[in-house]
Image (cartoon, rainbow, N blue to C red):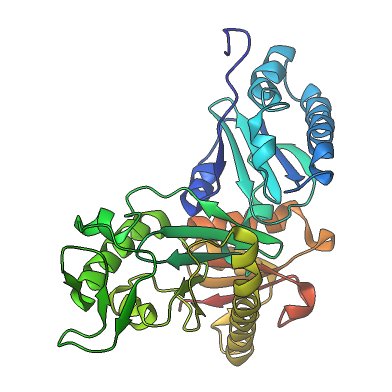
Length: 367
């Protein structure tokens, strides 16, 4: 248990879109940002705590030049509390940690992060922008009558997300009797597909599924409300058109996975989903780059840094493309990306060879 002299470590959470806005709120400097690529499996994951301690030491050295000794302990104390703990057993592909006088936060992410420790007047958030907006992240909804599971994935794999406010089964959603897991059916009846189970002689129709799926969609709306990552549906074939009728998440992919995924794990979900998702993500980058090329020279797009900075401040930028890689990791680019996000622009950090211009930034304007 944490004491007065040992601040409690933050809970390691799944990173959500709204968390970025929290980190973008003007903090009280100095601000510590630590990024660590982590491993899902042994033996590789054994090295992660050791590398994390080395990053804490780098942050301590950087803080020594800008903060008093008491402030150094206050800022790093909560993060030191994570050197050991059960959270290492549940690692994904990246760990991001932040500390200032008013905030201590830690997040696990399903994508690799560039290793580093940063001390500045604001949090260093650019490594998180690809996670939220730039084509390396997705959700998969595995749906059956007996189980509802949401997975969050990236290029290296997927992991199940803890859901709240989403029914876990048809019975949970509608209070219906238990059904046998080997349900059968035929495409008949006045309401569409008829399902037979071991209820008291009761036939469950399409209306029951519509109610069930609406409850799921309503619960997911709260979880995905600020997300832009694609969602892929994994379910038996006759569920797909019914779920799409009630879906309100705008980024549900038109192509899904057909079959019974009730007993699958994250690795198997990812193996089936990633080829479809990655193609859609690459297509999204190309569409935005092509749109930039169409608008270049019309006054509605630019790759001039100063002009883009002025447009960002005025809230004119709708889409900003920024080149990834160490070559472009500058404080100016970071600030530009952060300000664009504050103004509700879409920001995409993409490979340099996918940029529609030789410059490291390009923007499409709203007007």
